[in-house]
Image (tube, rainbow, N blue to C red; front, side, top):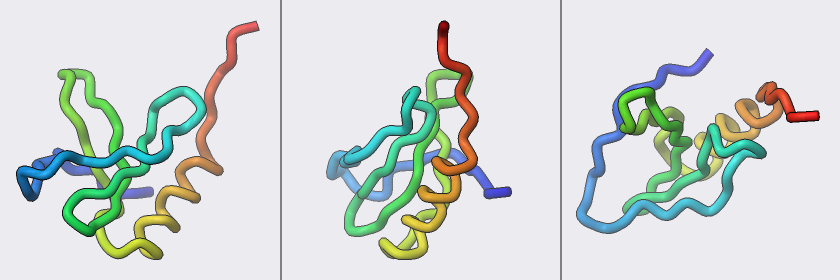
Amino acid sequence: MYHWEPHIPCSNRPVRVTETSCCGEYEWCCEAGQFFVLRHTDDNGYEETGRGRYLQARQVWNSLVKAHQHERAS
């Protein structure tokens, strides 16, 4: 289980989203040289987890995407 916390931009540079999970629940992001995973919240905000260096954050991304269950419409 990962600890999700509110996403608060750490610079005035834009967040770069380079990958999105199959349904858009998770986004692989980079901001000011740090990597992390974002997800939308019910109040139209964002939460993040795994912020840090590439390898650490990528392991979080891979784990979340692998475990992700999304019901596809028939």
